[in-house]
Length: 124
Image 1 (cartoon, one colour):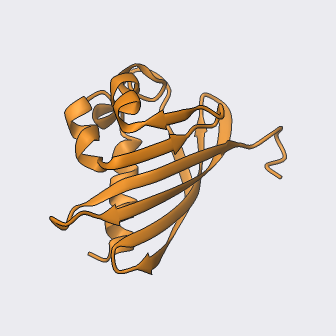
Image 2 (cartoon, helix red, strand yellow):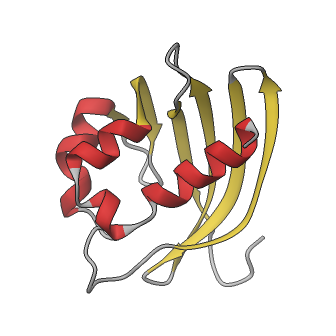
Image 3 (tube, helix red, strand yellow):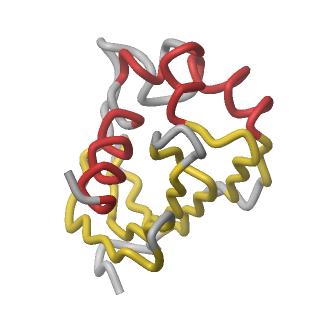
C-alpha cells in the first residue's frame, strides 16, 4: 500500500463508530504529537481527544454516522501525507484536512486534523 492508501484507510477507520468508541483503537491511529482544531474552533490534544472521542457524535453504532465524500490525498514526502475531504454528520457538513505521518516503526498515524464547517445548503 502507498502512504496515501494507508492514510485513507486510517482516516476511514477513525470515522467508524467501533474505532471511535475504543480508546485503544483510536490511540493506535493518533500520533503522539496529535493536535486537532475542530469544527467548533476548539483545539484538542491527543489526550483530550482520546478521553472525549467515545462520547462524541459518531461514536455510537446506533447514532449518527459520518458520511465521508471526496477524499483525496497527496504524498508530501516519504513520511507525510495530506488528505482532504468532506463529511456530513447529523446534517452538518464540514471540510476536513489531515496530515498523516509515518512513525519510526512504519505505522501511519494522524498528526494533525482540522475541520471547517460548511455554511448553509449551498456548499460554497
